[in-house]
Image (cartoon, rainbow over all chains, first blue to last red; front, side):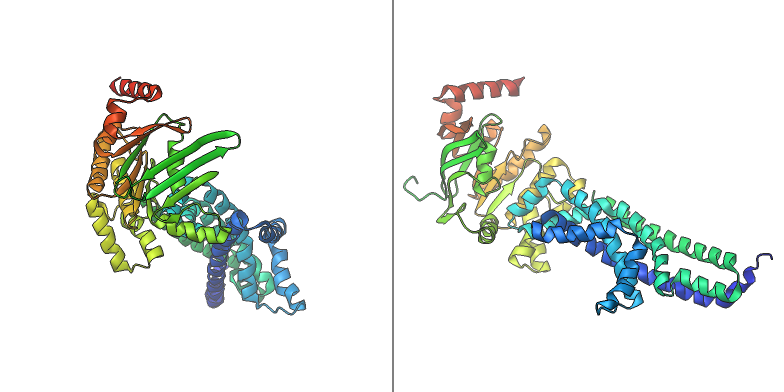
Length: 218
Length: 257
């Protein structure tokens, strides 16, 4: 049985809808992971031990267990305790929190690397600790971790395929559905691979744009 | 002048790190509009004293007063934070390494604190930034990033940033020590201009000729104590204390070498 890519056009809309869902999940989870990462980093560095410890346990849980398991837990597990999270939200939250923990690790290091004189200058003007952190330290810390956070976001895009297992019709699952009707796995998986790759190219371009803008102020 | 209540009053300032005593019972009175220079060898405690005024390096003993306000008073932590943030709005500080915010343009460096702390609108803050940058001769660089400026220009922006909060006092912590020699003068000129406007200033410096030209009073510190203080013509031309003489002799020799 040879390859036959002519089956693709008929199912293209299903696959493209899947791509749209993948992009939506990735953007949603990226936002969660970015702000969650900042929040976790600030807690880890500055909160009192009673606040810090539970969050540390949380971070450890998210770093030390498979993402797939975390998605199962959020989607299938939480229903049992009365929290019914829709599949799409479960995917965004699960992926978002998972990568928030990784972003937080990066940010903690870069926050500590910001020159102490920066905080002193801000405090001398009358800014509080939190104001100095928000307006002076964190923006500089973020600037320094744009490349590694960008890499995390590309990993996030790729890991978004896992959300297919909780029934979100994203790119990978929509390909599987098309394959179910056509029995053409090679054709559709290649198509999907190309689409992931194209999304990836756009993300890298966006990352480069951000880096260029930052470069101007360095 | 002398019977006037001091504008800044440091009483029995004491500071130690463990067993190391870096400030030993220092007293310093500064009148409104007065310009005081603190000189001395490195490690003499002069920067520590300056940084104690706005509580960047809290004292372990003694009192600091600004007019009738005690700066380093004992308060529960959260109340103290509020108190010190308000006090610091009244005390401008300029650092050796400028400490401009590199992620912000010159304009935003100047407007950040007035916007956040005094609730200035964008237009008001911009006007303020233009005024202050004009004053230090940096208006044409208002939309540059700090990384695009020379050291002298950075320090002038840092002065404008401090002045934008309309402080009652300006503290200069070796403001020209990190500058290439040819850039020192432009910063000195800005400081002289402030002196002419009767800004109260406390200046930690290695620039003896500048201190002599601008200051009303000079403190010579060594090993955590004020060895000698007086008007610049006395300290620089006719010091009484041997350690002062020795320091000035070495310093002049160093400058001529």
